[in-house]
Image 1 (cartoon, rainbow, N blue to C red):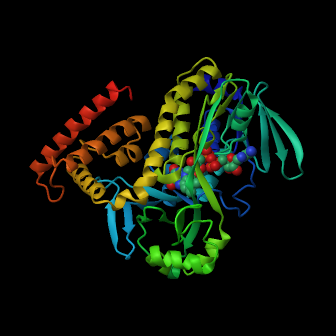
Image 2 (tube, rainbow, N blue to C red; image 1 turned 45 degrees about the horizontal axis):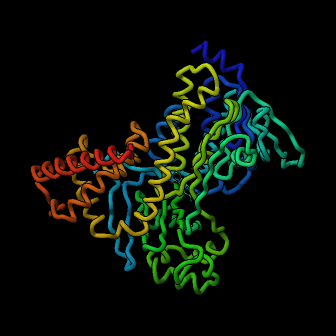
Image 3 (tube, rainbow, N blue to C red; image 1 turned 90 degrees about the vertical axis):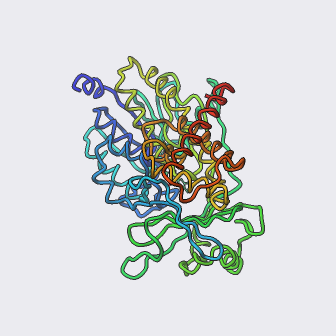
Length: 476
Ligand code: FAD
């Protein structure tokens, strides 16, 4: 609306970091009429062939798509997506089992190239003349009392200062502004960073002849081996990006002791033989590509005095096992946009309202992502877990409106927050696993509609009882 954009045009917003969150936010704020300056540390990924940073491809799902729709870009993003309908579980002998993500056919996740998505968002943001993006500008610190960020121009090593009405740091898990909050000791800033004992390394299954796919395309492949796991997501060119998650120093095989070609081949031959057969380039990739750590960052408050705010991974970095880090960072933009619509009378009020609604949800997805680390590595192979999933798929298929698993609530139901999805999803899991254990449920395969309906009623009743206990215990 005109009055809003008139007001907006008088406000100058500085964004630090033009990754996935920063470029989407720049576009949205540009659309709203703000004057936006974005400073990005790395070269322009549309011009220089740099690894886009972090994972080469990612899973985009409903919460992320909601944000893409907000900026009107779904028509351009959709062609970049490869639907993945479920997990293809590979056992040590090379047998595969397909485990759908949902009993509803229209629910799937999408593999997308980080570089292509980031480039598209930058292109669209730059179409707005009120948005300027500068590359090779590294933020060193933020003087948040004076709303000024200090940068090094990496082209010539000059120092520069940039002042704005507000600064939003979207500079990722190692945020420079968050570090300035931490070091300042000017206010009570809580911060935690927890590393997993596991790191990750990216590998590749190259395309087959004429860009064909060497294994099933429309799935997320998982080789779960309890202590470690391998996953693979498809790319548009017929290749797959494969990620090995492995301990740095525990177990017979770990990143610290996989130091020779022979050991790497012995490890893959013993545990991932069918994957190895598709990766003649394994050893080269293994010793060329970096090993990187994984961790969770939580902090509070995200804002200070109404002039600076943290968003995306800078505020809440999570481990990648729910495929939700980018989705959550994109959803941040949607939530922030809603708060802007509410027409609060100061940035401080906007930031406070935003953090109040958002933080409980990003805390929840951080915890869910850790849960899924254990689920993907091992639980997916346990009979009880598989029985629960079989039952849940049947319930979702037969009663698409009445049942949604935890995975579906988190991944496909963008109308509820992560926190609500977590509470209900965990209660349902507990309900079903308890009832399988005490034999209240004895059958999960080939149930008649009447039997399924009875089971649904039992599961729902038990879930409500557990939720009620949680409420009494103060968990809600
Ligand atoms: P980033 O994308 O990290 O962007 C930060 C930007 O800031 C970068 O461009 C960086 O160069 C710049 N920057 C950093 N420091 C400075 C500085 N000092 N000055 C200026 N600029 C700076 N999420 C999903 O939703 N689905 C997935 O399947 C998925 N898979 C993942 C797999 C792996 C292995 C990892 C590590 C993450 C995965 N994620 C996934 C999470 C996702 O990558 C992040 O949540 C997402 O990138 C966050 O976006 P962001 O813009 O906040 O941070």
